[in-house]
Length: 216
Image (cartoon, rainbow, N blue to C red; front, side, top):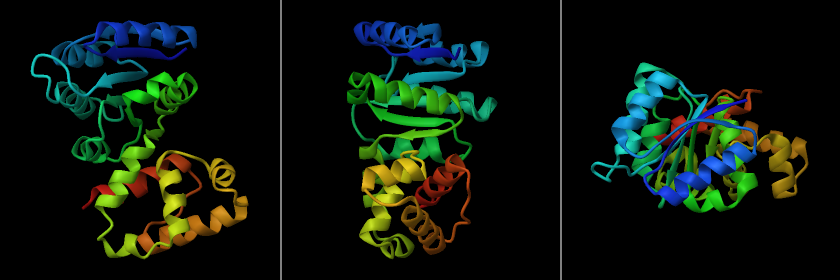
């Protein structure tokens, strides 16, 4: 049973998250509403995964993110799933900068899709990456001027976006209506064009791609 810490200042959403997670077999070890409480909880409770709102009291700017980053500096790889109202590229880049994995960034709208949300929580708790498709699209678009990325074909860009969301080759195959062998060929081409060594480990593959995008 995964132990979860929730940081959300809106009571209804915080309470809803507690009930949703408990209904899917998670143990909620804490539900806090401010940055200082979050940092204390992360360091003292060491949860298997934390669900963190970017904007928390007292400043309502980036308290949640800063608490998460501070905790991960002390406990590298501490699993964090960030929830945000909007796509904020700077925050996504900061989270991905250390390349250690166990990171997620979802828009709050995704919470209303229980299956998708719970899958993301479990993926991050397991050390993987769960990135909102809109976040990935913005990161890719902002890096379009980079020569290696510009060299990708439209289909390779679709495969890269799906990879960065944390999808396996089988999942990409189903999503894009391609054979798994075709996905493997696209993946090999992507890594070659980006100068990244291919890996059978899907999470490491995603982190390598995101680390490259973050290096801008």
